[in-house]
Amino acid sequence: MSTPTITLGIETSCDETGVALFSVEKGLIAHALHSQVDLHAVYGGVVPEIASRDHIRMLLPLIQQVMDEAGVQKPDAIAYTAGPGLVGALMVGSGMANGLGLAWGCPVIAIHHMEGHLLAPMLEENPPQFPFLALLVSGGHTMLIAVRDLGEYEILGTTLDDAAGEAFDKTAKLLGLGYPGGPLIAALAESGDEGRFAFPRPMLNKPNLDFSFSGLKTAVMLEVRRAEASGELAESRADIAASFQRAAVDTLVGKAIKAAESESLARIVVAGGVGANRLLRSEIARRFSGEVFYPRFEFCTDNGAMIAVAGALRMTEAGAAEEIRAQARWSLESLAVPAAKSSGTGING
Ligand code: KG4
Ligand code: ZN
Image (cartoon, rainbow, N blue to C red; front, side, top):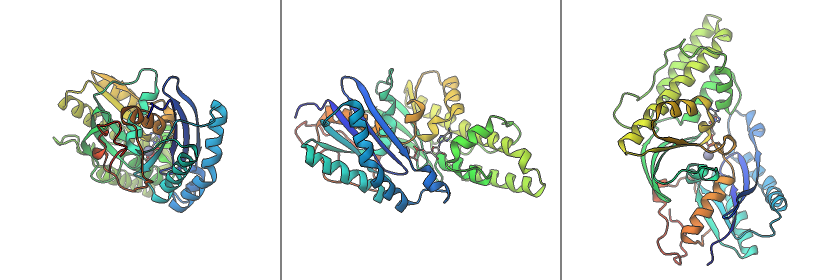
């Protein structure tokens, strides 16, 4: 099989329908994103059935839109998110990708959502070289990963309870902010005093590289209750948001630098939705002696471009033919790139 030059990327694992076209020669040539945030906001979280239905509604029009914009009649390959995520939502992307692959006679490759996130900085002008340390912080995951090469991932640390994004979302809920909470906490924190409340920096002094956010969440909850009881919540909200954000960022940055140093990695990639947090970005850049890479803000959260570039890299490495896949759970450490270009087995879970 010749190397595909244009890869269509499809992301439907959660509450964003993302579509993009990535060209090996030109880079990203078109992308489109439809966020379902408004649909789920009234429920305070993602409703899986609503997510699936909306992906069905939006996916084909978005594919048509990016193809028209880029003037592409048919891509050379299709990459789709096969997991982890909401199975019903994943099935929409998987079914569409495989149906179009059959119609267009092009290869279809299943991509791991988190691999998409950690390869997202490859879309930028100054992409990181392998190896690097990835701090992957999203609504569902908090991971420190030694990325030795494409497909060679070792998870060094993970959260024992809530994900980093979840901690932002739950704190936002306690403060009566909307969903998703991360950007709202960050905005409110700008007018707050981050030194007012000494919230715990969970696990920061433990020698391992794991995270835990439940203690921080409890500390925030107790402070909110105290402020409510004394009628001071309104004037304390920004200080609570700022103090929470500072504690969460200190924890993430401290562990990420410890992981990079212990693995002698001179580059850190920050990816996933929480990677859009400006304080996290500036703190890691200030405190880490090596290089730090991020995707642009819009590609920190879920998008089709990261799936397209991950697909293009994997196609270039291995070539692929895949079965239809949609899986809720999928280990990132099982993603080795197949050695033989002609193996046709794609990536194995
Ligand atoms: O990667 P993502 O879009 O979805 C998952 O795969 O989970 O991440 C979404 C998460 C949400 O929890 C959201 O609150 C958080 O990323 N987030 C932020 C910021 N922007 C998004 N957290 C902190 N600061 C931000 N600026
Ligand atoms: Zn994500």
